[in-house]
Image (cartoon, rainbow, N blue to C red; front, side):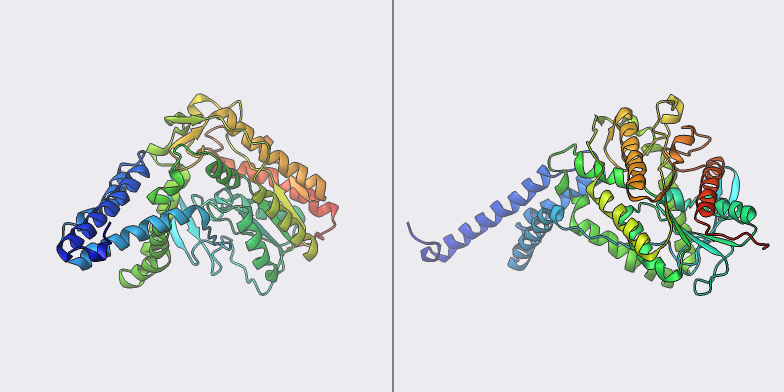
Length: 424
């Protein structure tokens, strides 16, 4: 059989073009196999992108044909690599110096952050401590971006403690939506330099949702969906870290971007209409793991060890949520985090099981390592008067949390003789 190089140039060209068409067709087949059938937008984008090399083979220009093939090779390569490459932004804060307003429950809420991206009122000088300093670490249930600076549970705890001990307290809210135990550990390491007298950690729901996402799959090829690829993540990162700030400078300053970010956060916290009633998604699973995620275990231990080494009293809070048997049918229709932003749901029994699994682990962990815990989860009723949705606190809920956390911290402070009562 003659080699390709021994063939006449015209026939060699036909053979080469045939291979080009076959390769480009394989790219399209891969796109069809990895199509995200639950999203029309991503389905169309996937087909168009993977069909592009095939369409380019009709061009006469060899640069266009071969360039399109290399694009297809790049797309396949980065997609196949995606499940094996993990990048975490460990230390995360809100945008610094936010100053905006939001209407929640018919009331105007003033939402600000300081130079560190933290929520605290009044502002503090981190280099000159003027009171008993407590940092509150957590996700969106600590951040409480929907509520006024003076209505978040960390601020209400600040007022309660100052009134109880008759001295100045600084309770600094460092919560950020979506953060997990690994992020709280990174933040704790950063905050040591600001001499905390105590650290309070509310963690759980973001960690168990990550465990769900890592373990439950509707489609076999889901890890290779275009929306989950390195390219999609890179485009999002460019928008967040480069294009967004550039638009700030070019088109109207930071206030517009801050308001946009706040509104986007608000939408996520409450859940858009199409994302509510998540327990009735078309794909439903029962999933009850034997243990919490290993990552959660590891970073809780790292937090505890850091607190011990630095001699900082660290207090863990159990994670309140609406995943309780007494939740009404009407209230459960507000859920959207079972898990969030997914095309499937766990059944309600599985969500109850997971919340108990993580909270029991926090209780057992605290007992095992002799650290303090405030068990607030068991004392909050599952209702729309306490939670906007699965777990985010209403104004009433925020007060209820503060009423549970404050006396718990008072007992810990008194038992350790950490605060001497004095006139403010």
